[in-house]
Image (cartoon, rainbow, N blue to C red; front, side):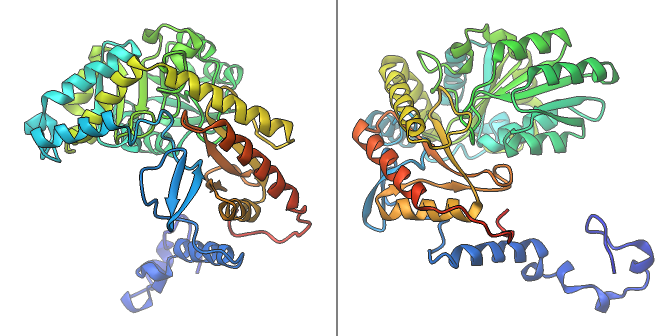
Length: 434
């Protein structure tokens, strides 16, 4: 019996009764997707390592972490500015709990609004240079609910081919026509719009400020020029660029010297540079007001928790007072990249950002390399398909302002040694990890 897109053909379905339904259609243990996951885990276990996922971090994670009672140099956290664990930030969260409790306890639209919420949204808008902003409880949900709500079946969404899953999910749920353009290719984007713009009502272009698996940065002025030429909307996901790029950490807009008003939707997360949890959309007052009254992910969700809001507010204000955190982050990231390249390591297209991949290609090799480094006191995660393209598995290093020069030099030297130990794999066997 064949099935397409998971559906039983009508002629076959008519012949089935409840006893004939295949067990994989009503038993999670037999889901083909779950069986594939089990196979992947078995392959990793065959390397002689324990499950590398969900490893408990036993204290605040920064340039170091503690796992199983061991302290390791840590590159698995995007606590870029060291705000998480900073006494000032922690105290702000504690004060908010004392005043408001641990939860907003309701949708902000109805009865969950706290003075902290509007104070935070105004601070974010001021930091970026927009009229207003709206804060959601989750970063992933911010992209999903905003994109799917603002655009629909008569519209076109063009996204970078390396866009984050949250962007892709928002595009799919919108019902709009979707086209992925080649990574960071403004000319290809322009050509697509020349051919197709007139077929649609609204058009959205979505890019990222720093791409989270490659660590490269778009030519934002060129994308703005394309969006203006074709009368489209432009959305920039700043999950890994806000607090990171620019002299004052104001993001890719500051880095590229653009007018913030030239970008229609500035999206960012609060869990990285700002030591909290959630996401935001910053832009003109009209779009923020519309989202606050109609966006499902905001209207039908609890408001961001008071301690989370307070920690972001404190982080932005501390960053304004201590811009040297950004300067130090830039220095440390530059040092790591330069040392890695001198060692002949494949850093891909990473440039001017604290996200630095070391591309090894084979998925199992990336897992083994990560484990070998762990044994030598370095904690760094691996990535393989579908998080990155097939045969482009890698380790992904997040640099923070708190990493020391000694830690970085030791790490790159150790990394180069471990990479050199890995012999080319001439096997033609395909791993289920890819």
